Length: 518
Image (cartoon, rainbow, N blue to C red; front, side, top):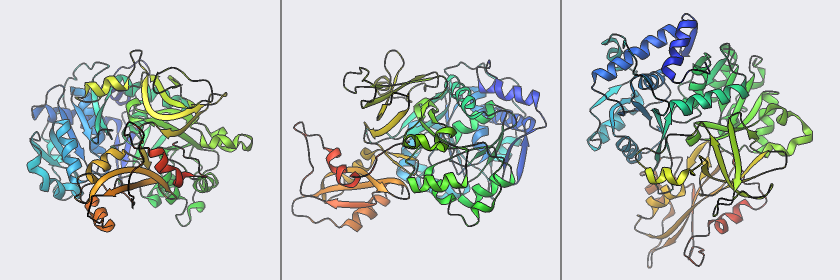
C-alpha cells in the first residue's frame, strides 16, 4: 500500500484484495472489508445529499463507535473533514470546538444528546444533529436512505480529512488539520516499527478524539489489519478483549495501564497472541512500569508523539525494556521512528545544542499536519521555513541517539494521557470575583502522572473559599482540567519583565523526582 496516496484508494485496495475478511469488530458485531467500504460509500453519498462541499466540516461527539471512522473515511472520499470532539469537555468548551470547526453536521452519541440539546442554540453553523446508536438512532436510516457513492473525488495529498483539537497556549484549543500525506506517512512509519500487517489484530481502546484512537485506527486500516474497537477504555474489558480476540497490537496510556494491572485475575489470562503493547502520552510511574512488565513481558514499547505530527515520532523498543544493562533508558522516549528526524535546539535562537544539553525538541517528517484550522499565525509560529516543527517540549538527546523529554517549554500538563494547557484553566480562574492573580502548574500524582494545581492571590479585602472555587471550575471546565488543589499565596514569583516563574512554583513538588514526559 506504500504507493497509494489517499485513504479512499487504501480502502478500495483492501476491499478488492480481502472482501470477505473481517475489517472491524465492535460490541459483538463484525464488518468485512466489503461491508465497511459499502458503508463508507453510503456515508459519502449521505454527506453529499446534505449539501456538504469540499472543505466543509462535520463533528462527532460520542464515545468510540465505528460510525466515527466511517465518517472520517467518507470525508476522505468527498473532500470534507471530520472534527472529532473530546467528549470529556465541559459544555462551553464543546461549544467553542464545534463553532471553531464551523461544523455543518453534528453526530451525537446517546450519552450526549441531552448536553447538545442544552447548547443547541449556541451552535449557529450546525444545520442538523444526527443521533448515533441507542433507541433513537438516526445514523443507520441516514445511511440506508442513500445508494453507495459512485465516484470518489480525486484527493490531493494535502487535503485535510480529519481534524483533531489540541489545547492552545492562548487558552483555546486549535484544530490540527491532518492530511492524506501526513496520515499515510505516519501509517507507513509506525507500521515498520510495530511489524503490523494484514494478519494483525489491533485493539482500539483509546478515544477517537485522540491520535491514540483515530491515527492508530488509520494505521491499522492502511495495513489491512483487523480492528477490534472498545466503546470505552474499561480495564477489565481491555484484558478480556486481548485474550478473547487474540489481539496482536494495542496502545494504552499509563493511567489505564495502572488500572489494568490491578484487575483481579489479570495474570491468569492468556495474552500469548500479543506482539506489541505500546504506551505513551503521559508519564509512566516506575511501580506501574514494573507491574506492567510483569503482566506483559517482552511486548512493551514506549511511544512519544504529538497531534501535529499525526501521532508517534519516537519509540523506545521492546529490547530496551527487557535489558537490565540499559535500565536507565526506561525514562527516555527512545529513538526517532522510520521517516522522522529529531533534533534539540536552543528555544530562543533555534540553533542546535550540543549532545546532552537541554533545549526544545524539533521534529521534521512527512507526517506533519497541514496547519492549524483558520490560524495561519499559529501555524507559521509552529514550523520553520525548512519544515521543522517546534514541539514546545523540552529535552535532550544522549550520545546513543535516545531522546529524553524532561520539561515543557509551553508549560503543558499531561494528566492521564490528556494534554492540558494551564492557560485554559487560568483563563477561567481569572474571572472568579475573589481571585486577583493566578498561575496553574502540574504537580505529581501517583495515578495520573501529574495533575493541575492552581496557585492564586486573593483580591484585596476578600477571602478565597477553596471548595467554592473548585466547584466554580467544575462548572466551566472538563473534569480532567479542573485543579485538584489550590494554594493561596500573597504574591506570585515573577521575573523582571513580569512573567510568572512557574519553574519556582513547581520546584517544591518535583524535588527528588524525575519530571518526565514520555
